Length: 429
Ligand code: KE4
Image (cartoon, rainbow, N blue to C red; front, side):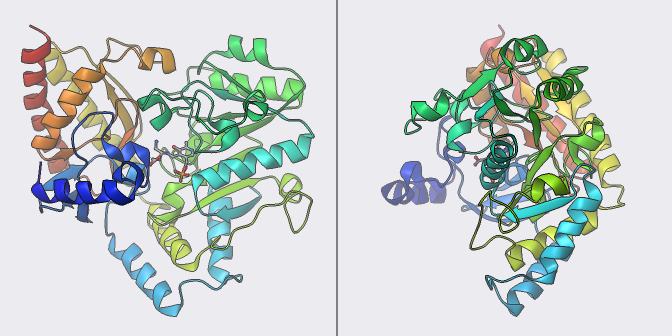
């Protein structure tokens, strides 16, 4: 661990809770001192001691093009020189909205906000406004940002720190939220009734680690929602433009009522969005009675980064390349783990993946939680020592970018092989 990160972390902890502005960054899931990052380029990040790492976090998803893509940097520079924020409409917001609508099959109208949390909070309010109902169903280990109503059996940091239900959320709110196991349609059928406004689901779970939808799961949710007049919210903050240009809904051919987006549509700048049919979105102020607003919503610099990012992704071979590279990585690491006798399960959809220290299969929060977190933490630090930056929690998804070239993948496999050999020596004898 570099001295500079240690020094910065000491100072940070004096003035910021846990020394971080988002809990999962604090390395509490793996122990040790978080790296303070100085700069990044392509597939690499450099910490405050100028130590270099192959980045498998990509800012938790947004950096699908890799860091510092020249088109995105140029677009941001150009926008910034024209002005940071006006609090007034700009044409660029119309263009980004049109790009999103053209890409995501179920969206006819979209509102830009500043984070994924704002997107899901607004989507939930829209569902409640549209149905006049209050209850919402989510899934154990699902994470949809720190929305009061959705911090029930939450994934991501909630799961990593074993605090799935946050303090400070009134029971009056959480009693309206029912959480059931992911991939369990029987549990959904048993819990659903006509008092539910929405079911919100990550179409590929990323916040209990990566857990793909089982055969028929998403279709089953669609049917159950239709049977009960419940709106289906696909939370595509992570999967949107990640698992396909049209998101998980295009990859799995599912039509939600409301979609939430974030991360990639801002290319690393603060952004979120929620979209739906014109009929539903006409409920949103100033057209309709559902209020939602934001000083920096549609921020011109963030929108410029998003437009440039989607522009590079559209009609590119990036998704095929990501599939190929990610598949090579998966095969290489599974082979290494088998060779060293370390039981692991890799769940992957496109370039989002998780390596569980677990015999598998990992199909929901309960099975994800059976993973050996001690082994994961040891592997995490061995890989850090090898110059590989993994998500600092067993219950998070990792990501590759278009900048992860063949040589990066080969290096990652070699480094994982060496690390797994040590894990085997320490845990499997
Ligand atoms: P933000 O408010 O963090 O922009 O988005 C919340 C959110 C909503 N929905 C899904 C499916 C998400 O994955 C997220 C945020 N993802 C986490 C990663 N597990 C962000 C990392 C963090 O909390 O620092």
